Image (cartoon, rainbow, N blue to C red; front, top):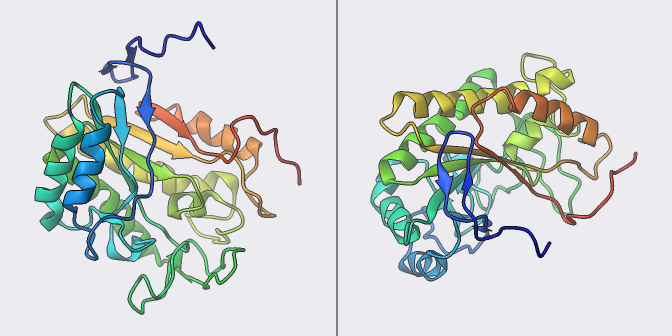
Length: 271
């Protein structure tokens, strides 16, 4: 570990150079306004931490109103958020630190209180195995397609705001992971029913966001993907599933993978 070159630059897959190998991981500070717009406290929080790390990743920002997971969560669901997002990007991009906006939808990992009376949504009508979890309704095919477009729209908004990239939050049991998981995805259509079909939603989200980047004036815009290798649920995601997904991710224009798990040294989970 002492020989690791933490302060040396590293080049990403798209050719962008990160000034060092230290990244600030996304953290849930719950500091945004009720409508998801940025606060001065949030700007100050990131400004105080920017400049040193090569890359700073924001906490999750929902891509649509049904994707809100908790109070105080940042939103990238509407164009009205652009001025605040621009301030946030500028606060992070001190001394060549790359600003990455993490985008997501909570899926079933929210509740009707947070959604102001609306029922949570997911791949299927299966509740999380957590205390107090509400049973979501399954997204219709049209809603699935719209959610994919919402991720694309959020990517465009991040580009317009001056961010250096987005991270697709496909980890921590949120919606992208819910479509990949055999626990939360019991569909029998294009979006579920087999390992390959459970990959269709995350891969479609990647394609939609990558297409926005390709058509933009920012070809060096970074596209990252966050994943959790395994789940505790049975049935649930296991390492073999994740390795199959990574094989497909490698075919996509993903610039980095961000692995999220409780213990970096934990062994492979059994059934």
